[in-house]
Length: 271
Length: 213
Image: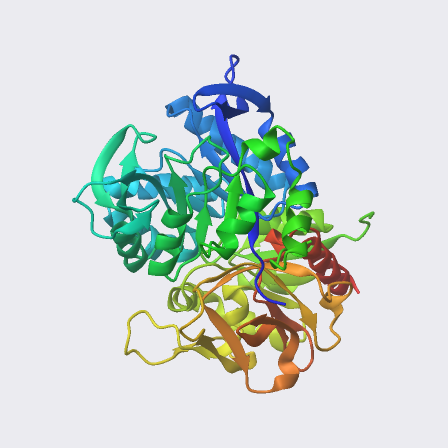
């Protein structure tokens, strides 16, 4: 046997009306639906065989950050698998307090684009293994990119966006992936603005372009509609981990069911 | 799975590592945990855990003041359990220097051997769940052969004596997942038992049982 592919449920944490942590899942691109209590959800997924968790603070507020850290501590005290925490991490102090709360890794997105030296500082102080760089990629079909791939007969490149895809940066994702790797990132978390919420499958050309250009592990995210999408992103794109939210939150597929499917197809998973 | 044993376990604080998870994992396994950097306190404990994430050179530098205390404790035949970087620190040296071109960095030398970097051609770090293959008996290995554990590392232990290899894992090469000294009281896991779900908790319970024996 060898290293297994990881199946990671993503848990988006927001504040409910009473200011408590709650999990919300996007439906049809924008509407957020309440799907549960984060600690209960983490326990349930742990029992179902999740290999790791990603918690994202989607509140974008100071109260949200504090609630998020309490939630991370509550989960870390109950569930003994790795936790990655992202959302709003901009300084070395943010990294420190998130790790201290019980996270094993932090996922940094726009904070690293705004201040790339945060990657070096974080890796030096806490180790590369806990610095995950997250990108929100968007396909662009113009001439301004660095690394082009063929998609449906057209040449395209992938741009890093910020603010959930609402703002472009002109930064090439493949270029950025190489840069953050050389700065000390230990893992890359690749989201696709184009695939997000579609359930039509991961953005394979995007994931493959990143996997082919770096030697750090890659978590594929956005677009998963079922076990066959996981299979495709592992075998065709070379991803090390597949992340999904709604298929698990709305009980469309169980984690065990996804893993058994992959196992039958010869993909190494932890059963 | 009832937990009846109580062991007084000291978790060594040398400024690195996610002590919270290791503390909760050990508590779940039935230990009462004290976080300390005082070598006097090690001697009073039933067992000592050396945790660790991060870089080898920095780890050894931070641990300089407790080095002699740890070595003296281990040489009394008392249980010393190193986790991840803490396991690598049990060996004689590591290729992992602060800067390229620097020589090897010295470890605690409780298990003769050297930590080496994985060769090119593999994704580094080796990150994720991988299978344990138990090679020889040791009190911590009960019930874990063929189970999966969570690893995150770029270097691996290469003990001089192959009998120091208690369990192996395959990542392009077979590398030691668990090592132990000849007496068995000094041992370590390359993986994180506190992050390895039920299998990890099983190892921590085995450790707690061993400490109170």
